[in-house]
Length: 312
Length: 265
Image (cartoon, rainbow over all chains, first blue to last red; front, top):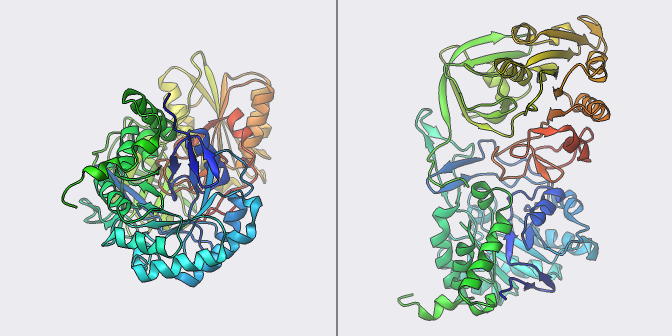
């Protein structure tokens, strides 16, 4: 019997399919609903020091084979956010996502997560340094360089005892080197993936960009090949586990990401294409693929594509 | 399953007509139809440079919305003249449903919540179902779409908080009589949440099928961003129309909203 059961740091989880940060997870109730819809873990909306309203709309627009979004990190702020998501008691893993403008702010946010203590119920903390469309954060603040990654990783590790996931952008050069910098500085896992870009959609009738912010990050099936390649590169550069995030809408997509080197995957736009039950459907399809192909454990396929790759 | 490939969901039409309903509500008729739109569904209306907001569909033929001047996007919509452009995507959301054997329905609108109620009564009538309407507002000048309702409803009852039009009090004065007297086969409400909560509770007590239209701060409109969460559900795809039972099961219904940052308020 094939099994999707999986270890996420100290927690045994039912499958390796997570809700990606920024999607649905604005409220505790939404995170629970995602779990009810079949995911093995949830990565909550990214929290900043102060509450943020996010960018003016339109925040999202569909485009060829993907979606562009520029949310601008709307969130209730670290204090309200931890109160909203905390007290987590479910069997699925809760991951708290934090975003700061620099290493010092990341450190302060991590301290707040640490002081929320065990009652928070979180299994890990994720630091997103990869948003392509919010001034002062992510790639717009140059957070993807090895120097910046090292400083941010160390600041969080100094302040917080939870396992740390560094979420990298697929838009930075040298993902493997960036991931290695995070690993050397103490990161416990890499999340390769975020929206790609930024990109732009121009409305012909209005003759101007649709998104309120003008540009936004591309997600959905269009970006999957790039994420698969980036996960593949990182798998060759680090020993810590990888979450693959970007364009996964089916079980086969998830299996492909694992063959590239991901231990876990997370999905976001999949809820647009398949509805809220996407997580459970992806997990079911993964299991069906494993059974049809005689794979008993996901460990047997993690990174298998790597040994056969030429020219990278 | 949605197939990836649609290049741009935004449509743009000319404004055919502007109707000034009162001191703060204007109705905008577009120079197009939206035959697939159903009562209870909404559009995401885009004002370039200002933002995008969800608006109830008041009619599909012609495509009509009614806008209260309450913020940045709506004040820009109030500047539109006939011949100007209106951009939108949709229709989105779960529509109202009418039970199969219903012969007579009650539509209840508070303030400009009356707008989707007109569309529902109109479609009911086209399907041989009679509609009664109760519309309420704070004061006489806040009553909107009364004349439109007269054209599709058998009767229209009006209430105002200060008694300047119709019965003095809230919509329940008129609605309770119709619900308790079992004079209707289903009831629908759109308006202030406390009002909808009262309607939902009374209908539940008297076993009258009931649906309400719930509003929350909305950003993407397509079930992705999570801004319009009410407990574990999303107003944009699970709603905005919820059955009375489901709405009453939400701890947040009638109690709290969330602002643009997701904080409870």
